[in-house]
Amino acid sequence: TNLIPTKDEAESWATQFRIQSGRPLDEANPVLDTETEVQGGRARVAVIQENLSPEGLAFAFRRHRSRAWTLPLFIKSDMINPIGAGLLSFIVDGNRSVLFAGTRGAGKTSLLSASMLEIMKNHRIVTVEDTLELPIPQMKDLGYNVERMKSRSVITQVENEIAADEAIRTSLRMGDSALVIGEVRSDEAQALYEAMRVGAVANFVGGTIHGEDAYSVFDRVVNDLGVPTTSFKATDIVVSVNKIKSPDGMEEYRRVTGVTEVRKEWTEDPLEENAFVDLMRYDSEKDELVPTDALLNGESLIMNRIAENVREWKNDWEAVWNNVEMRRDMKEALVEKAEEEDQPELLEAETVVAANQKFHLLSKQVVDEYGEQQPERIMNRWREWLDQQVE
Image (tube, rainbow, N blue to C red; front, side, top):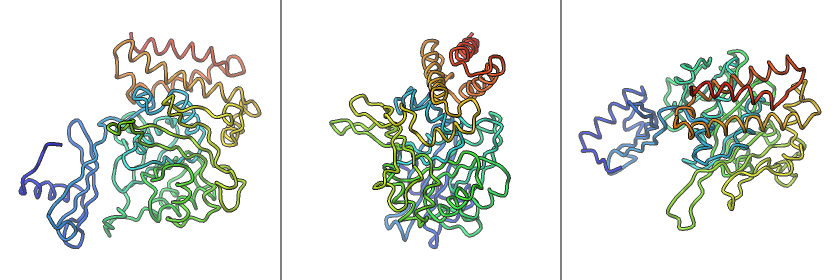
């Protein structure tokens, strides 16, 4: 920005952030990692001071959207296309373990936040973060049952805060819940994979991690974070999010660049043993995600494993794909309706969550009435509901 604080102002900011966070900022602890919220915006804040920063105090603010991101909002901003959003909604709703990987500032946490809104409200959610970035207060206002846990920062190592791996183990004692980890980057990785591997987490598991693609995530988890090679198999899906540059290098665009499933029949190297199977891949010419043959032909083991838990979908790939397409159509219809009616609020979390809930209710209603999923009938009823929202 063009805002340059005076020395007194900078020191005042540092004091306020220290008091607000409850974390130290002194010679012994020259780094402060925290968050702040003011009217109209939220931000993650990093502060460094003397003995680490010889010239004095330095601040970095990473601003977040004041309201939760949603998949329709990402469709509107071209970060993901409707079919990619439909697939992601299906995977999250299917209680898979998903890591959102990407470079710094690519939008990993924002996409994770949007994906959390695809979880049905009858599931409890436990989140573990060292810096509070997920939109939990808004989710609670929307009726979600969320328990937020704040863990020790791996940077500042505040002794009166619980370590992230202990926070994860504690979360497992809190009953059947979806588990969301703000960022997988230290000892908590081993606790997380230990829990996933023994089936302690039966619902959706999500988290963010630095890495450009599925193999770089494997490399980081196994070689940097010390998770046993075979434990990595507990990962079902890696969603890659990256920044795409314009040819002149002057502009950057955030894009979902891949949706990759991790198959389980391998021993040493998942890349060499073809364990990474792309379900969708970014096409730079089209500037969007494109489904692969593995997805279109029903060869996804993860998708078929989700189908095995639904009586109407077992051994019926067409029914599974129809459900993904309905989710696609639903997200796309919200974007189109918002533009037609000049009502951007239709893309916000309140409407998106209500739309998801209505979709599930209508799907059950149609199955109860006709004995099978009938996509056209479900979507007709859902569109009638959407029309009522803008009257």
